[in-house]
Amino acid sequence: MKIRFFTIVLFGLIITSCGSSKKVVRTTSTKTNTSRTVHQKPVVVTTEKKSEPAKTTTQSNNETLEATSKVSATTITVTEYINQFKGVAQGNMKTYGIPASIILAQGILESGAGKGRLCLEANNHFGIKCHKEWTGPTITHDDDAAQECFRKYSDPADSFRDHALFLTSRSRYNSLFQLNKLDYKGWAEGLKKAGYATDPKYPSKLIGLIERYKLNLFDEEVTGTSGKSNTVVVVDNSVADANMYTIQKGDTLYSLSKMFNTTVEEIKRLNKLNDNSLSIGQIIKVK
Image (tube, rainbow, N blue to C red):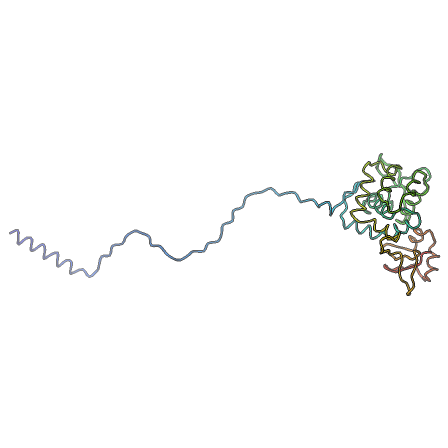
């Protein structure tokens, strides 16, 4: 009886397995590795940072000029001032014996390279105060004391000429004219000793400007010691003397007449000029 029951069960199992046409596939839960590389955008992490103050210009590019007033001037501003007034300074050196380097250095320092208030409003390039003998126009400005009286000019050339007369007409500056015209250091020290300025660093400021911008080369040109003097030029194939002048930016017949102590009519006569027009680079006779 047991054998018959076992046979029936076995026969049923065989029929069940044969009647199913689907195969049972077992899967596992393990992940397969892929060889594909996924390119992702990089993640940029930023942190909040306080903005830094702008960097100040280096000393070679910026001058702090503080004599009559404190003015910040760039090397470009100073160079433009030099180019504009170097001819006036060299003319005054020839006429009055003051080194062109000293004239330019004082003009740069006292006028803030042409940007100071006294220069802009009064054409006063050298910080010259009124003093008792001055009868011309004036302007008040804070200097050693509040609202001091300073001279006012109608033209920059008048200021340069008055600066020369100021030094040559006062006995306390006489010792300066005994110095070599190439001794700009002696002149700078002498101006302070004679009382031109109260700033104890005045000489070093002048010397610093002269050496930084090589203003002493203008002295060498006037004295003919540089070998590259621009006071001797060729005009109509003939060599002209120091009475010839090359027109610079800003020159007028009026300013030239003041610079060389002559008249507008005389300059026009010497050069056969029909009007008052001048061109930069033009060479004219001044005496």
